Length: 85
View 1: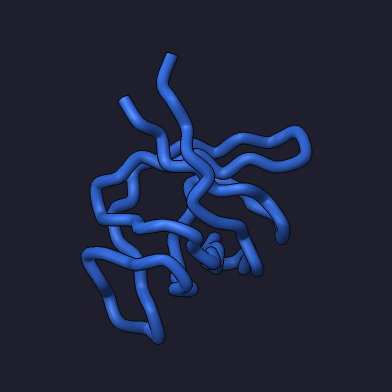
View 2: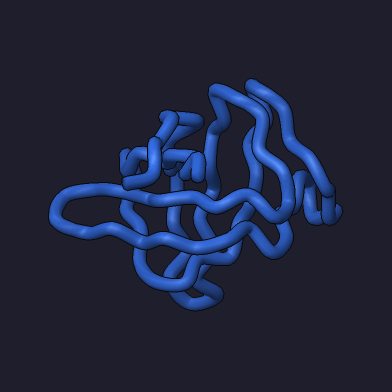
């Protein structure tokens, strides 16, 4: 089973474009596998792209608030984990 490391929290979710705003507590890179977990829901996906201030970035650092397209639904307060193989 893969290890998971808490790297952030969902602060807002926009359902129409299916985009989550995530406040990071650790580094996140394009290509990382993440798991967004909340009350009864889990969304696992690979980070294809992320944005800060509407600009695509390859890497985000601790303290950044990023926009991320989500392959499912997320809720405010959901935990975001990096999945470590």
